[in-house]
Length: 374
Image 1 (tube, rainbow, N blue to C red):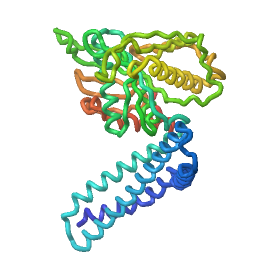
Image 2 (cartoon, rainbow, N blue to C red; image 1 turned 180 degrees about the vertical axis):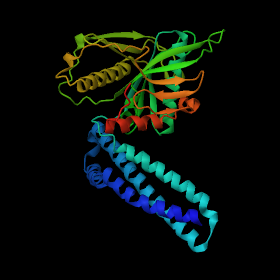
Image 3 (tube, rainbow, N blue to C red; image 1 turned 45 degrees about the horizontal axis):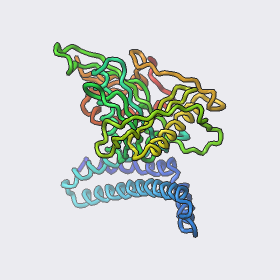
Image 4 (cartoon, rainbow, N blue to C red; image 1 turned 45 degrees about the vertical axis):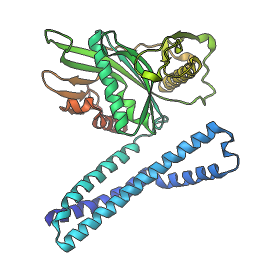
């Protein structure tokens, strides 16, 4: 029964950490805010402004989810403490597997909740807009780009996020040239923002008859979806070039095969956005405007600019030396982040969406400033 005694000590040590976590998550503030939102929902005329009311409903659900997660963690701790006491009183070792599994789940849930406390950025709670771009190298790079697309959509699904395909340009032989998706859910941008950058792949090419080792690059861009609430965000009609084209690529029956796809070019900065998955040209243009606005606001805030017109077009180089992470399939297996030093040899798991160690390491480094010196 020594192991039960050890777990009893572990649980006692965990209790103050659980209480501290409640403070870090500001659960009292969340309860007060939820009461305020519930009062607004019960007020007469609440649904007269559907757009405003919908935002309040979504915010209330997010707060309810936050409080419910912590309630379940507290209940889990109490259940595990009870198991320990019963096992020790009855000298029953049969409950040890349940105790071990429950303790592992609880500590993992607490670690995930603790990460949320690191999401303090202005837009961390927002949806994320992700863009994928193949680097030079034709089919090799386009195949790698599609592998990254699959990796992130797998991660999103595993974490309860939904994603919407906005644009998808297939490669000529395989893979994809570029794609845009919206990852929808609380803290999507906060968790994904560290994935912004160039990703490098080293492997034996499946497209090379001589089985030579190849290096490929693809870029991932992550920006928060930002509502049009800033008075200083002015996008002039004369600064936009609009192109229409026939939809193609992923999406199946959800893609309209008429010339309803829209591409917008912001001439002062060179920023290009595209959408092809909405049902009409008008809807695709609206989505493009939302994407463009989000990109302009994010750049303006990041570069501490006074106004949108101060943004200068900068083209990211998708090449050696600029990568944030290396994925090596050959001659050994290794995924390593160049900024945090986080690494794993389980390449297959990473490509199936197991990105949490890298995301956690980035957020921790962001909070502490302890980056790896290149």
